[in-house]
Image (cartoon, rainbow, N blue to C red; front, side, top):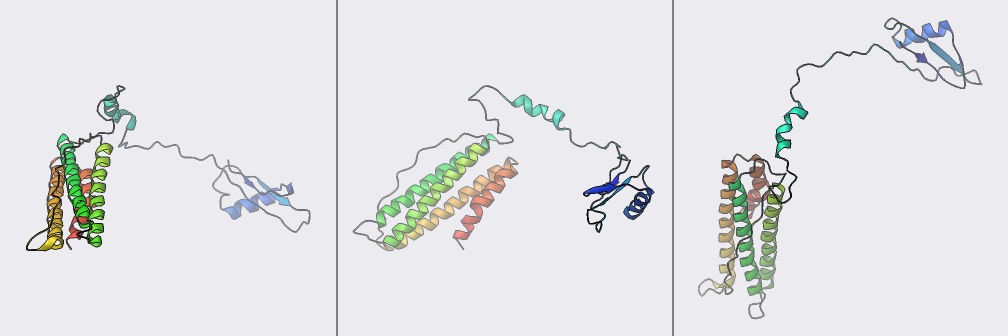
Length: 233
């Protein structure tokens, strides 16, 4: 059933008004019944205010061709849920042990490079070397590599892996070079370390590709590999 209604301060219902409103709304021939209420204000200069229509002719035809049934398909995942604390992470999904180990290795690489850069910072900050620009450059480089390590640690935890920190090698603390001088030698050393880090990141990316882990390959590409290339541009 369809209702066409006009409401204001007072209302008057007439068959003529009902017929007129139905014909103007384009629904007179499509519904089983129609009623119109014409309202007038106290000034009798204003008539129709609003029109409402409703219909019982609603299609209840079922949708066919179901593709995804979540409550039945999720049962396999629910079986893996454990109530015992301290066991394998519930967030872990398609995260190969080889990828977990490769991330831990790269964390160690980033921390070792950061340690070398920190040693370079301390060297150039000495009073008898006194190259504050290089000191600040290597301090920032050390912080950046440490941030890379922390980013890898966070990703390891997000994927349900376990971070395993390894030993860091004590770096060389003297960087004076008889032929090149300390500044040139330090910059060449930094470039070599960046290239080495890039090779290690490519190995990490390959480990993810071998394990068919698209999320990890995207993470390594977006967060690390692009930046490494820009450093050599």
